[in-house]
Image 1 (cartoon, rainbow, N blue to C red):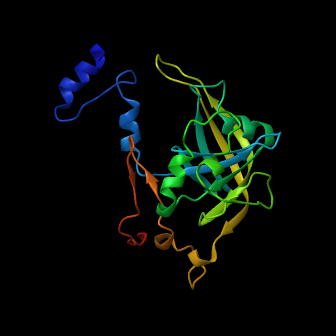
Image 2 (image 1 turned 30 degrees about the vertical axis):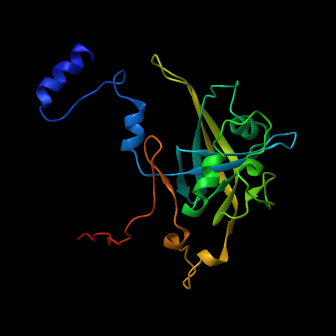
Length: 218
């Protein structure tokens, strides 16, 4: 801990202050939680298919419909297959991870050799997409076909950090299984039972749902 951080801690009392060199990445993963899982299928220019879950994922706009996921630097190869694929093709598919698909999602995260098919390894069926080349997870409640809009490369600034890339995609097609659309035409989130990511190896299910009406002023 730096002298500046120690001085701040002495003044804070019950709170603990950590500067960037002391704040552990594992704690950030536990604080920014729960997080939706970006289960991304992609395809190389040669037609090799990849499927991988990403912990840093979210929607960033509804009009236009856009989402993002972050791909960290690979430890066993120059670049992760997903990032290499989306750079080549400019396409990917987001596949909704339900509680029912938790084991298959986890198996698709295994560090398979380059060119291996995670669909086959995780015993998952492929379904064809309409607007993009990569296949989608057939049993997922929702699949969102996406075209890459921008890739932002983030370079490390401090010792121990690694490079990462933020992939931003625009949704150009969607598949929603009929059993997850309710009588009002809305997505039945409770029935779909999304799986979310916490810190470490921890995950969570959807908890209690409730509404909070937006306040009016004046």
